Length: 164
Image 1 (cartoon, helix red, strand yellow):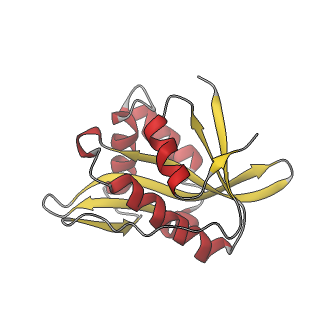
Image 2: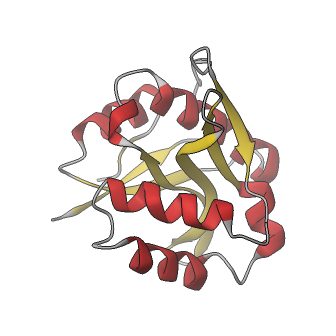
């Protein structure tokens, strides 16, 4: 499916959107049992980003594991406070647009049973604030699929627009 690049220009207004009651944000932590790596893989597999949890976990290790210090300040999870389980994730990563390294909103995913509760909006608002803290007022971008209509609506709400 075709990929769509969306840009958030410098100074775009970010509406506030808190997490619903019963959920909290948590930054990635390295644990002996790979709790957060496995949670990331489970969430990504649940939205069909990878055919298996093992393939998602392998991708996690290729893309993120070489940067443990960055990972612990850039990857955010939403925790269901009743189960203490990670149910959603997003990352304030980076990538290249032409020759310029730019802050990138990366891998927004939420377990399907939690859709429609405002968690996605809260995650995008939180990660955009985090990206601003880490990278300053810069042009942010993301890449998504044209089939991810609900996600694109959230991105537009947060000030992103399709890059033509």
